[in-house]
Every structure is written in C-alpha cells, then in structure tokens.
Image (cartoon, rainbow over all chains, first blue to last red):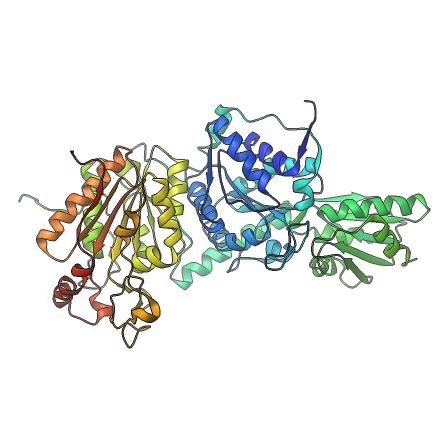
Length: 359
Length: 248
C-alpha cells in the first residue's frame, strides 16, 4: 500500500480502527484533539461507536464498561486528562480489562502548556492510579511507529487482559509523516475477536444456563482473597516483563565510548546528534526503550560495552527515566542526564554540545 | 404443597449483606421479579455502585459489573454501547448517584442513554457509617452533620427526579416509596414499567426509591418507616415526573 501523509493523532486513530477498535470514548484536550475529531468522523462510517463523554472520568469508565463487555475499546487524552483517568485505569487493571489508552503528553504540572513533553513517565510506568498495578506502556518515536502500536497495543491488551498505554507526546501527535497502514481487519475477523473473551466478559447468556454469572470487578473485601488476586496480577506482570520488552539499538558496538539512552520524541533529536558526532569520528551508541514498562533492563545492561565511559540520558522532563537506566547500569559506569522541560524541545546542536563535553 | 412465592430467578441464592430492616432487599426483589416477568434474565446486565449495595454484583443472577464510586451510569453506557442487544441497568445509592456521580447521572440521562437507573434514597451514607448525603434532610443529624444539616452552610438536599426532569431526553422518571405494603405494590408497577421500556428500547428510565436506613438513623425498622413517611415523603414526593410512553 502506498504511504499516506498524516498527523500522528489521526494516524493512530486510523490504525486503531484498522485493528478492530469499534468503540471509542474521550473528551477533547489539546494536543490530542485531532484524534477525537478523527474518531468522530470515521467511527460512524465503520458502524462503530464514537461518544464524546462529559469528562475524562466518564470516558475511562465507559471504556471499563465496553472492555467488560469484551470489545476492543480505546480512549485518548493528554496529560491533565490522563490524571483524571487514573482512577479508572486502576479499576481496569484490577478487573483485568483489556483496552488501549493513548497519552499525547504535554507540559505540566497542572495545566502546564500544550507543547510536547515527557513529564508523565513516572505516572505511566510507576502507577498513576492507586494500588499495586502496572500498565503495559509503549513509547513511539515516529508517526509510523505510533500508528503501528495501535494494533500491537490491542493484541497485548487482549493477550494479558491488561490496559495498555501508548505514551506519545504533542510532537508525535501534531507532526505529519508518511505512514504505511496495515490492512484493516474485516468485519468477520472483528466478529471472531468479539468472542475471544466470552469465558469471563459480560455477554448475552445464549444457552440460558441459570448458573451463568460473570462479574467485572476489582473489589475483594476479604484480605486473604485480595492477596491472592494481587499475587496473581504480580505473576502476570512478571510474565509480561519476561516476554514483552521492546527496544531499538542504534550503532551499538564494542567500541562505543558513550551510550546514550532516550525514548520517544527525545530519541529522534538525540539520534541526529549521534549521527553527526559519529560522522566526526566519535563512537556513540543509542539505546531506545520502546516499552517503558516493562523496561528493557537486561537489554540495556548488555549494551554497556568495554569502552563505554558513561551513559547519558536525554529526556523532555527532569530525568524521570534515569532511575530505570541506573537499575540497568547497576553502578558499572556513571549515568549523566540532561533534559528540557515546560514544552521546550532540545535541538541536535544542544545534545551534540552536551556529548562533546564528555570526550 | 403449592408454592405461591419463591426467589426470583434473577436473584442468586446467596445471603444479602444488608442490615435487618433495610429496604434494599425489597428493591432488589422488585427489580429481579420484573426482569423475570419480562423474560430478560439471559439478556440482562447490571452495574453495582459503591455504598451499601456495593455487593449487588453478587446478588443478581446475570452478568454484573462493579463500578467505581459514582461511575455506574458511565460503565452502563459502555456496556450498552458495546452490547446493544443486552439490557442494562444501574443500581445506585444517594451518595454514589447524587454527590460523587452527579456528572455521570446527569449526562447519561441527558444523552437518553438506553439504560434503567434504580436510585435508592435513604438520605444518608450507609456503608461508611452514617455520614451526610446530598439527600440528607435539613437539620437532620448525621456523623458529619452532628449539629444537623445547616442549609445556609451546606445547601439543601437535592431532589434528583426533579433535577433530571429538566432534561429533554429521559423517557420515564418516577419516584416511589418502599415504606408500606401498598407503596411497594405501586413501586413494583413502576419498576416493571421501567424494565418494559428498557426491553422495548425506549430510552432512559429512572426510578427513585424513598427508603430507610434504620441502622444509621438509629431508629428501629418499623419506626424508621414511620419517620420516613413523616419526614422524607413531604420533601421527596412520590409521583410520575415523566412518562413518554403513557397513553395521551
């Protein structure tokens, strides 16, 4: 198929519909508004449900209902709206409901601004809502990858009965790039997918068995039972950690002098700087985590070659990923950090300057 | 021996968690009987709230979802939109529906969402131990209004039926009482009508039950019924606020 020039917000919406998403609930917020607008326009054309909720809180709870009914469902928002969804995300994780949540991050805290940022890393990877739970979090770095992650996110959500977040940012949402779309799932495929959760989800009781009773629930009032439930979740998360880390290596070799770690939009800028310095005779490797939960600790650890003097982390926040990098590096070499915040995006020249100072 | 009354099929054979003298059990039974009578048990889904009826998801004999506090109408919206072939209701108390979940109920009603909402109003938070509800009467004492509800400070109780009746979309809104035998017979008719409209896909239906909370009111069950008749019903007047299906 020929490539289509599209904004990230629209591309991921189109890809979600292609992946069989037929229910979408959300509330407008910049810089993800093109996503909700695309869904408003396109969902009716495929017989799907688009509903503009009264709040992000309502939207995520509509997701809870539709996911509890076993259907592919999505919501999207930007940072302040994701905070409002945090309650619902905890319930979704507790009740083990598959769904996809997109965060097109903007500057924070509070209302912040509407420019790209990565300040929700902790919220996405370390909790956000209450209780002991994890989201699977995918961090794209191009419009193509953002779009590709829609179907991957739904597949992971279905596989593990767990909410999956795509952690993008205002740059990826607003930027236009050529995108190659996967073929859309057929109505028959979507119908077949619609039955995959019938062992536990809300659905009509076709055979009329009076014992049929499914509960979509995160409440376990008996601590003995709740401990078992949370332990079961923990075991599931361990399985996800073992099987589902994703990362990208760029110019990783045994002669790397510096190892750079960056994710999402930040990694795009950093890559340009790394290219320029390597062309000048330096040897810098770039490690890009694609899943930020589960974090690819082991894969990152393997990239610390014999000549690496230090690891440098660049983020559009105040260093929220640094502690994960430090876990991976485990004290072998120093870990340095530089970032910009408030919706300011660093330039390749600035990154180059920081890296040059290391030699 | 002829059996003349038995447990509705739509209720599971599990013990209720409600206090003695509480009217939740009556409300549950009226809903379950109506679902049985309309033959909907195999196509029904319910949403339980947070509050005394938090365990309602265990009591009804079909698929149930347990919602976050106040969010039942949003969860029901998600279920109904995902499974239009099913019939969906929420069961909510006054704190859940009229305080923390005010936005969700108003907007579900305003969309004319094709769900039924059963609202139990006993003017108090039961599960958490008797705190002031949005429907607590003026000067009524609760654990968080120990000197009585001061309307100058905290406002007047909310009449939810009247509030929802300002919206265009709702199909049927009625307030009933569970305070006497004849009232319960009337309540049953209202519940049955709501379930019938739900079955027919008419739109948003809403039933408020004026109820009691002997435990947290600190009154014996029979006296609680009398107290509610004397104090609740003058403020929360039973009646049909909206019935778009009524013969002209």
